[in-house]
Length: 444
Ligand code: PA5
Image 1 (cartoon, rainbow, N blue to C red):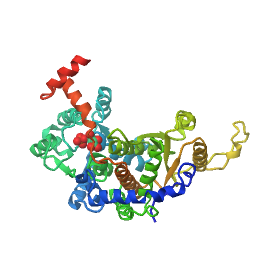
Image 2 (tube, rainbow, N blue to C red; image 1 turned 30 degrees about the vertical axis):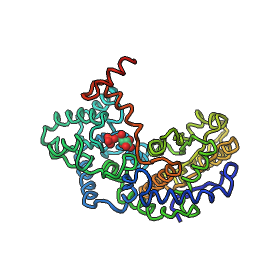
Image 3 (cartoon, rainbow, N blue to C red; image 1 turned 120 degrees about the horizontal axis):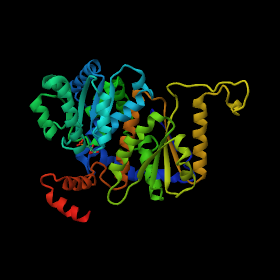
Image 4 (cartoon, protein in one colour; image 1 turned 90 degrees about the vertical axis):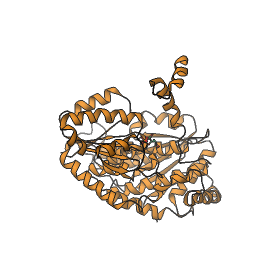
């Protein structure tokens, strides 16, 4: 029995009851591609074992580094982009209350190097001001432009504040074991380093040091996170579609996609799950969007976006399906208070819990959207604790990997990400890209 409850009970109008079973042979083939490494991209499957087969000495070093940073730094500047930051930011948002950084004296993890916005970086430099801080620079290739620039800027600030020697003790590097500019710099300067395994792609790296160090610095338990993922790893292996909800998720996505439901909206009813969707969008989009096909991953935050996107979802182009992440037990609940006079007309809700109201909204939306021609599936999670999140992360990683194989693509490469980089380097005048730059400048 899997820990998350995957509810497909409202799909009946869109998927005939035979259809899931008819996917079994394809799912078996996809499972073999993933588990036996017979599919494309097989060198990038080490994430499958991360919850059980990881470097324990390094895991302890992560905890020690986190304890030191929590002691000596008001801020950890976590520098990375794409898979090198989304998972950590997502986990920190999910695992802490919405206002933790404003209320507590804790070390605040702030993300940088995930855009080229000059305003963001200069405002962040001001925000950090004279406070104590450390840096975790995260880049598998060690050469990505956005984090490289942010690192240079924050390193300069670090050295200016502490001098070269102490600055070096406040820089933590997460990168490739052997290669890349960052690895070279780390070796020269003696920075504490953590390894991103060759076989773990960026979007599958949250349960590696990429995610674990910032998450540990936030005060969350990475032991519990890994425990949830470990149980998911053990439970979500059976290719039998009646027993494996992650595989069911992949199969239903494929069935819906082939019926023309080409956009999936990942939804939540909790503001601190917003980043979960951002992490999932990279996981799904980068894994599946290739060879001129793939489900387009998008997201919506409810009930907020029911007042903006709700109209489109209810009555717009009918190519949408929804996957809801529904939290079954909130961290805290509040009750609608009674009022002497019912001038606001809310008397019928007096004494009801806000979470009950939220759940009724969810139920109403599922039925309305289903009636409007939008298939809805729900992944229920019991709470927003580390164990549940670890399980959920693994659920989606496996589900998307199987989904990619079902759609006949390599779920582990990302050739399309390079196109913009070549152009940007050409236009920036990077050595080696001059010809591309000349060509592009003529077209601008
Ligand atoms: O998933 C991926 O591979 C990408 O999104 C990368 O994570 C992103 O481009 C950052 O790359 P790097 O970690 O090499 O700096």
